[in-house]
Image 1: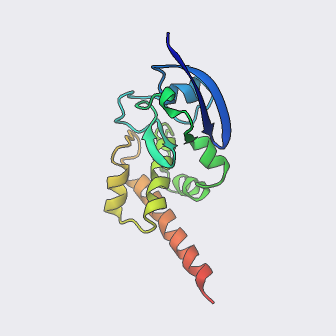
Image 2 (image 1 turned 45 degrees about the vertical axis):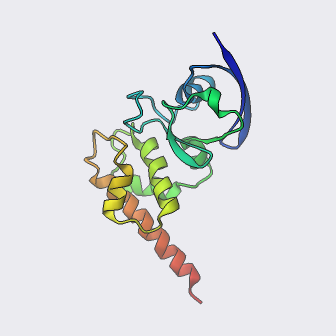
Length: 165
């Protein structure tokens, strides 16, 4: 089998590995690096369970080949969570019961963080549109939309509060 040597930064740490040419990013993260937070489900890029960031953009880990990532920066749910980047989103998901079984939650959180990073005040319709590629079989999405909206409102309120003289 053909292997490629790659050096990739995963959650801030440089990793060098020889990977098979056909190894998907999600399998590399889970199998080779033991990062089990992102999940494998459809393996066709339609469910969003394997959502991670590559060079700042969210991608489906089941559609990206690890061998193509030499020199890239990858962030997983473990990385953004450990840094505290999404603590408020996680709290809102818990408070709004948006993480019922939890299987879709890592992908939803990565997707929500992506949205809030580019749009501080999304409408409910914009939230629904942005998460539309992430499947959830438990919540009916209402609680997830509520949690993302709550986080956005709190962030804007907090930013406005800090700006007052």
